[in-house]
Image 1: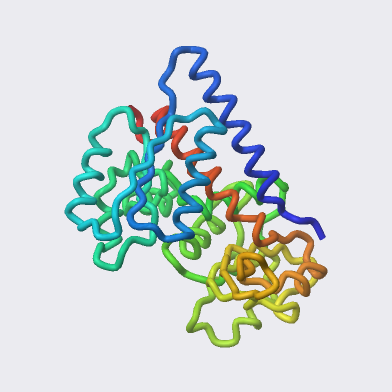
Image 2: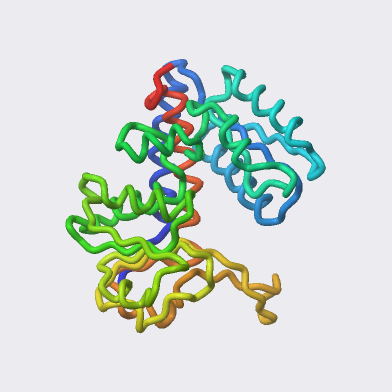
Length: 294
């Protein structure tokens, strides 16, 4: 069993990005600039945004963090978004989700210019990704694809089962895995909450990608020997033995599933760390005009 190490892989990706940025600086080119908008003070969101800002420093990007109160109206948020759309120095920006209940996420996603949508959530980017055209691919699916590539995992013609059909992970994951490409070309089955007898599908999976947000849902009897298991889930579970009062669990019961696998991602330390590297890469692409030109 080989651990798919998100810490090591994301560090490699960031090192590659830093080399590119150093070249841009040396030639007097534009330094990539990422902005993040944080509405309210959700604990997990604070952690994620801090990690994104820290990563910008590591790779030599400029970063801007815009904090807004939880009482911010949708109209006020839209004003900020329009300002960032119009700011030529900002290459890409994200609005950290989830947003307060009174703000409609879909409206916010659509308001971001596709050229600056480095999260890859805008319908234009999702459409381009679906058609196999150049686009910003949303961070988590991209992170998974990058791991498959860095560890040289054979996906050609393999049976890939994706559990979960969210627009952010499950659905794009299933599309990317079925597209033509060296680390794709899989035969994909999508399972979800209405699938009957999920285990009958997962047991035939050469590659199992789990993104449903239920702690330790996948058990050893659901996985075949030698499978590649990628656990996208991350759930805080109450645990009195921990200083923080909770433990971080994935969607896979790691201790019992890992011995059966050829490769598996740990949680934490797996896919989550790749998502920030993905955001950095999309921002670099935006700065260089690789997807939409200048």
